[in-house]
Length: 252
Image (cartoon, rainbow, N blue to C red):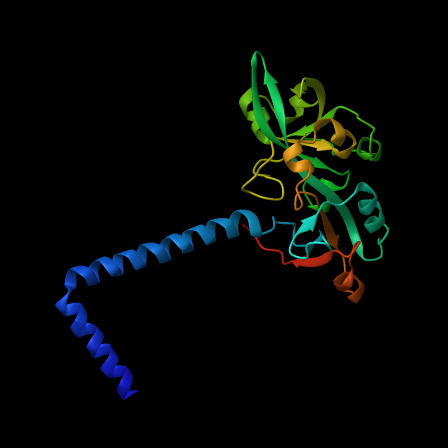
């Protein structure tokens, strides 16, 4: 303890001899610590924390690449079907991935984020749509290519219409007309707040709308599972060598 006090006194004397240098060093350290804290807080809030799920636990399965243990690879649609078979473990199951699409509004075309999701996406997340419905099993079926879409609440706000009035209208995505069958509730940003999709499309149109950037992304595709018990089977489940991750429910 005596040695520590001597070191502190010595440090104070050195700072007193060079107040300018000491002041600059303190400011630089403060800025560095503050910047790191701010960046981590932003990433943690917008990417690492799961969305609210109505009080239920949400878990996820990520498919680990055996050839590269530190990376993950995409799930196939058949993997989603296999995991759905564990209905004694999970109350609901959904799969999703992100993509970039071209949205046409008159003569103007812009790039937008869209989520390609399975039929159980909204029910798994305990999300009640503001209007309309989610996707059916037929619309989810691989290769069904049925042009339907669920739009975000911003769509109705920009159009200055009620959510129910949007049902049946059409939006042009990747030079194709899609019929609106549902409207997401206000404030719903999907599974990550940082990348909020404007549209949700069924997995049946994956081959038509999947962007090359996301098609080959190792961490792009994910299975999220709504857990209904705390069984050892749930905690130990692995899919194709994938690692099972438990996400604790927390609000953003």
